[in-house]
Length: 341
Image (cartoon, rainbow, N blue to C red; front, side, top):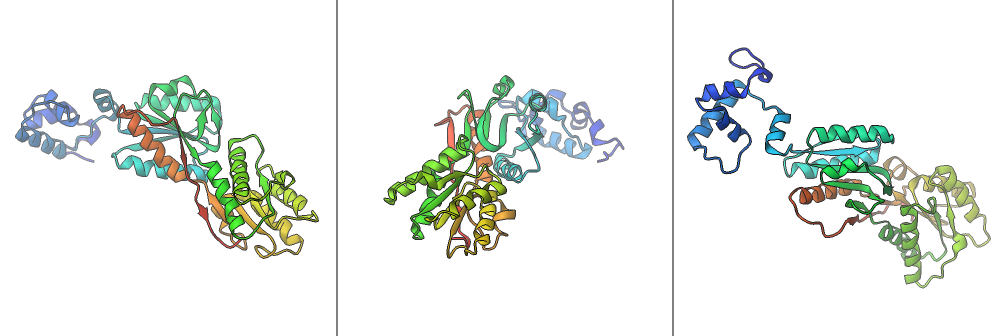
């Protein structure tokens, strides 16, 4: 932007604005920073704003943040910015932040601890008002101590030390919803192809699965619970194991959509039809899998966008000095009905 004197907006100073408006530099600073209690007459304020507009003055963001003790930015650190989950977290967080006229500064750690620490330092240098830390899969994490310098909320993970607040998917309710959907469709022998057994998602989804069977009066058969190790090949192998039994299940609940994709291959290789012979429910709602399998996959959606928005809600409360009701908030995983049940 060029000013009326031919200089760029970047070269226009607060002193230039003060001279144009015929006021002190302090008065300009008070108006720019909306200083509480500053007795600036309305007419003087109008002259200052007019001078800012005429000269094309743009405040230095760093200096303004220093003066106001707020930057109107939240920082977000995630492992891989381009991953589908990260895109959804960013959208949910930015949409919610914009309600308070705030923005996100985003940094990727690429799973490297040194890069993560450097990203955190850079965000703190920009005087972010709060920090979101998001992971690709639900797990416990340990953040550098510097994360405690500002309000920090974890997304899709939780603090191993139990100090920082977090927002995570409601894995138990999701697992319960998936199994109950199959029970309500008339199935009693429901195989469960789970993730690696000790991670939070696997533990929560199995708990929900077992609860749904118990509520329906269906005895738990632990031989119908196998691990597919979160891969398509693992899902295929696990489905083969279950389907080759004399008393094969009539439905499969797969702990993620990749394993469901592998299970589809195992079912079709045996001349069985989905959902007529074997119904399938997945988890995660990976769009490129769930919506393009044939038949389309019924699945549970991980609520990344909602978790990003809730994370900013929690940051806003913390930044305002308001206590949180709980350190760990869970967000519902909705069931998306398609054609596989």
